[in-house]
Length: 281
Image (tube, rainbow, N blue to C red; front, side, top):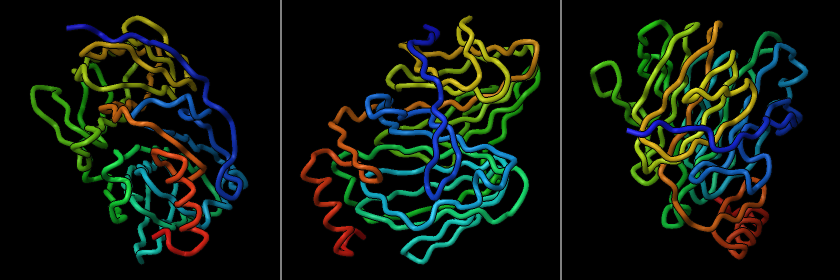
């Protein structure tokens, strides 16, 4: 077995999106800073209502999937299909934009902490124009795995062999085989996970400091991992927390224009025309 090491790191970029929501862009700071099949990941976290209260009013997507993971707070999703879903602490939403979706994500609180992640997962060309769909997953539906030495792993997506058994997250894709996990390590705890060699992988430490195969991964940076089939993690003298993303690369051209992600410029132009003509969905 070969443990993966940190290949390169990117500092998260402070920015604003939606109607002015303050967030940190962890992946996708620039279009060349992606990790196939993942396009982007944002981390929003604030105790100040002014940083999030304007939310994300109606906006379109085409050609990929979004995964929203709430840690603190309450958001409401609405879309053109008549779907409505409430995201509370620990909940996940998996949305396949496919050929097109118009939706909003709006805070349902006027004070207190709002924290979570949104991840963009690409679709292969053959699936980009499939009908849109979405699913809400309550926190209780996610496997919560107690770790030796303290801490917990919450499995959002994919399969994982750990603690003597096989675990299955509630969501996934046969095409990109995403593995997404929220990992909390107690102080001085260690954890080794199997991680299939075919998967691209990255992690983002957002509480404390984590070591990856002996290399320190500073808080607030994304770390793209090199080749291997295991992941060796260790916390320092304080507890640490990270989000792990892994997936099978699609290996297709990516052309992005804001909320549209296709394979060619012509397909992007068609998406813009369809949206302007009210034919996106």
